[in-house]
Length: 289
Length: 235
Image (cartoon, rainbow over all chains, first blue to last red; front, side, top):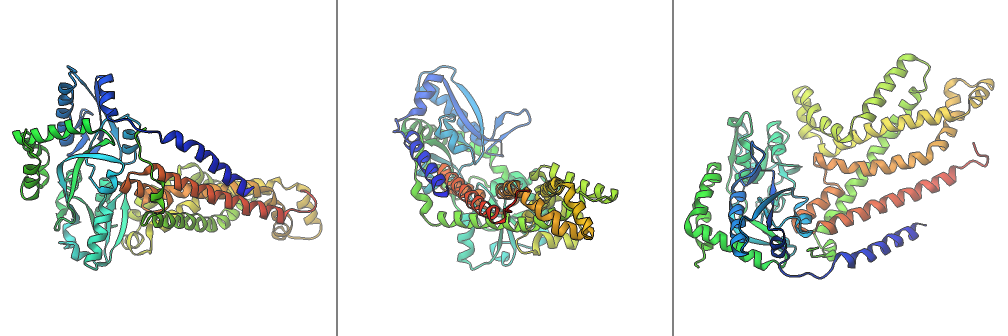
């Protein structure tokens, strides 16, 4: 009976798989956009300042502003006047399925580019850099990673923090216990309730969640950046036409200084201004016509 | 669908290791939870058949508390709220110094929730044993405890063995909710794999297969047990 059930499951899976894994056409997203006369943008609802729902429940933020300009550019390139922009909320769990099944054309959030992820999707040019830092209570006296030996740290699920934190800890032979929290708000709660000593995530996102705290003066964001990651927009594989338009728009926004203005409006107030590596990144990506 | 399948990924390190440790935590959560829930459930179940009105009320309250509040909510209450209500030092111990606080909180919640359900099961089983059995025990001079231990409980256990199996399967599935309080069990690990590689369908597919496997093994064990315990004469 046991073997029988197992083999039955095996047969079902074997029959379904080839159906699911059919061959792919190129630039399906652009074809879809042309048909619907609309660009569908996947956005995160609570990843301020990159993408979030504002007071009037509209998608807004740095990534959204850039993607709106990208949508206009797509309209111009495809000769669709008054192209419609639709917003679909995504979470770290739904972003890939929604891109894979064509619900979302471009994901505009805080997704970090990595080689492993590039086997599944393609990324645009980077629009920001993510650097992991430590959110701690001021009274804890923690200044950097080296102060964390024997302590407890929180990492948010759905981030790449686990990888760079482990690497950094192994390199400096520091022993900590890790607690996985669901999101940034819970990370803040964990620090506030002394469940953990530090919450490690991208500095801009930490700044974003700290703004929501009632006792924000009790906390500090400390430490050297633990990571160097690119925040970029995501499209499905085999969409080079769409990707060319996206990257072209980013390059032109950079060349005209428009992107710097958006960055200063949204990101700089969170303590990561256009200097050093961000400045270099923006210069490199401002590709000439 | 625009998706790049890569099942081979699951056999690669570190992902294979993540899945297996996840499976380990799932099994540990379920079995530890079950070992606590079973005696608790039996005790409360017996209390539910008591003739004392106070014991009846108390055990009824216990059952409705733990059985009717959604498990997810119970997880949150025990993990986030209860440590804050305790005296500060005890609360801190719960949050920090207890080894694996997430795991033990998860076990406790699963055990309480399941014990509430088991209690009702045992009550039903005890009441399903024909009254004549109890009377016969009385007639042979047994006291109430002896009648319960030697006459009623052995029969009740056999009656409820099939639904007991499905409760056992339930605790395995319910254990996945422990991911919300940070236990890296099977579902959490497959999420982690999806997050690192964006191959979520494969990761969740593997988790599904593991859950099915655990369920089949449990089923097999319980069927064997049922056969071994079967009485020559049906009750």
